[in-house]
Image (tube, rainbow, N blue to C red):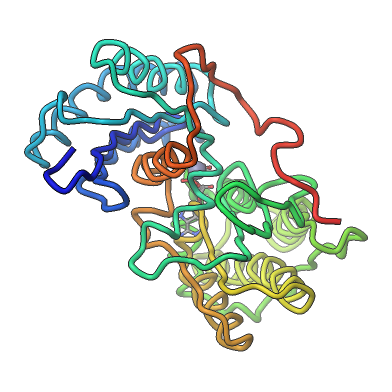
Length: 345
Ligand code: KG4
Ligand code: ZN
């Protein structure tokens, strides 16, 4: 605790291939260290066992660095938070167990955090905070969710993906084009050199209007490659045109549902979060739609879009303020618990 009574919160994130440690003083980020496991690239995707081992090696040095950076000692930490799920069980276990151990030895409260809730409320890490009710689009490697967020504890699900997540679609198309993992940043770089109107990729029309589907788009890209480049050799300019046209179709599908929701629900802010929110085209289109509806849009800076512990510490702090308490029995979980979000209709 500092002299004004503000709490020092430690956050640990280890759900996938980023180990991250953050220290917040109340809502203010004092340190947010992220160590990315780049070695997975060689395998074309995240190898769970290797991920767990890498988290184990780096989590303690990261905590030491965060304490040094903030001039704090472990005894100055008032609240310990860690991601409990969804994510890779072995990877989650590392951060969660470390946090529980610290909580036990320091006799400080521990709060397990849902990773997706961390993303949902990551807009609150920014200077301009979202206002409730907010429309939040979560786009990550594992999730695509359109949410009506009424308060810190009332989150209604409007739509989700019926197949691939937005980030997953970027990663799969990237693999098809020979760019590898993670696909988003590479497709984005390739797209910047291409013509987004060169190929018309179809986007699924779903009966459940707020849901998303990206597997048809992914298959359309595959068919296009098979039909136009049967020998598998694709010239650089064609690769860029495919990337740009794919990116346009995917961003268009996301924005279509956001626009529909804005037409049907009165909200005071719009927030775009998750790893795919780093995408520049998506950020621009999102801001344009918000402007059209005259609503403030809050998109976290890129360090808070991809997996980070600052959003975990912040969410833990929000829960702590609502009086939420946890013992040390919290278990890691691989997916979002069923009925985790409320139903609006
Ligand atoms: O939120 P995140 O870091 O991890 C999960 O919780 O899944 O999201 C990772 C996803 C990956 O699929 C990656 O390809 C995608 O975010 N991504 C992007 C960009 N940067 C990362 N997708 C599109 N454009 C980007 N610039
Ligand atoms: Zn994430």
